[in-house]
Length: 223
Image (tube, helix red, strand yellow):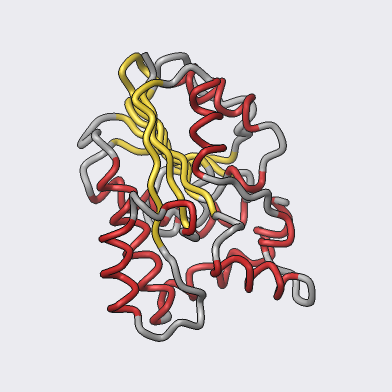
């Protein structure tokens, strides 16, 4: 999987500069940071990719480090002045109780043993620290068309394992996290042209209609 992301690293950020990509990025970040309770502290961006969320955490005042398995992605992230290292989510290279926050956005789709990764997240979190995991929802209209496309053209969706909000909640619950909540945004497929309307619906229904959202997030606290 890392080899695939190495190949696309150079063009990965280009999509965020499109009209649709800008809408998606803005809306997903709105959801993530509206759910987080942490406002400062030591943060780990797990599966940081090109540093999109690492940079946002840094801008918001966190002492943040990114970790990813793809050296190609990390080269792009480091070019933005970010502290990012290559590492394995199954064996995080940090001492126990190192972080106040662990954020992982669109990484869990590409791991095979999420329980092991959550055990590592719990280990490196301080008591009272929070975790937020965001993934793609394969039951949404957006990803129905994306998965259909991946049958003919190689995309990341060909390799992904999708979750529902309930499945993410159960993973966190089984890992011992408390105060668990979930939400979701992005309800229309990628070719939907009316982004203003879509964004207003996102902000109105992100709790009630999360099962239909393309982007879903779950948050929990380490006791």
